Length: 362
Image 1 (tube, rainbow, N blue to C red):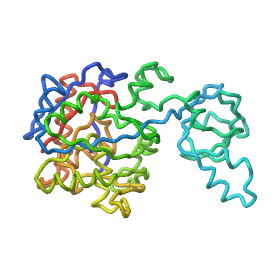
Image 2 (image 1 turned 30 degrees about the vertical axis):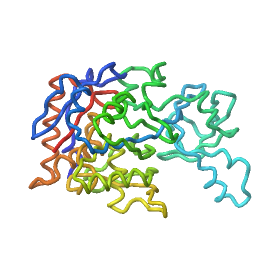
Image 3 (image 1 turned 90 degrees about the vertical axis):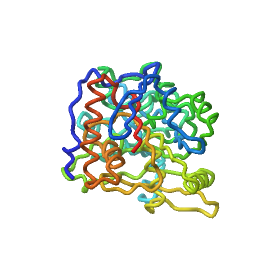
Image 4 (image 1 turned 90 degrees about the horizontal axis):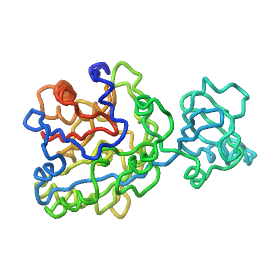
């Protein structure tokens, strides 16, 4: 399948640059999209008693830091251990080595940049991502003090500003964000409050959690022409034993499994597709590089809640695969999803991370 099959046009004014007070919901059911007039309040009726809704409890790390010269650096991961093992002398400098994304073309060789807090930083390896070394160790306390949340680049572009707004600190975290580790929010969850979850529980819906720390793949575009040639970056995922038991019990009684977002979907589908390891207690964990594209066989999720995704993205590929499963041609899902997106755009739904919600019931 060619990546350009996942392309579509959209007006820039529909790119949401901040969360709306009330989410609109597009329901896709019986082959047709329509709007739920009361949004999330109407969505509750589509859940049955005994259904399971799965959430991602990751928390976004404020890992975006600006140098004094205005260079934006996204600190992806501490690679000090790898650097130390490569250095037989185990130099102290290797305790401050990071994998990052930055505008390396604007960073001259040998030029030391200054970070907030009087920390010096040098680029020691170029490419994508890059490797840098700092004069002081960067702790989580440092990032909490000087860092910003790594909003998607298209939000910065639409805002025409690079720094976070004051509301982003709360708006770009889910109500149940608990385990630090993500470079982006599981944005489908941004539509739901704890009160919404209580309404679902009152109906007999079981709420369970998984963890997937959203990583580098979120920020890197698909650069290959053939989707089959795309390589997914691994992301850490964990499924508690109680969560997996709830899913198995629900499936045994014929109840539905609702995935709140693509991160939840990839995490759960990683188990039957052999991407996560099981421990003695029944939990699953590990790095998953599961790539869901048309032709994929979903074995866990049968209801999908997710935002409207960017064209030519692996997330749009996942939604297309979900809609296309069970059809004569797997790629049929692509055309169906693009038609639904066209309907949403015509009806002025807000797009992407801070945008509106879509619900897919096959």
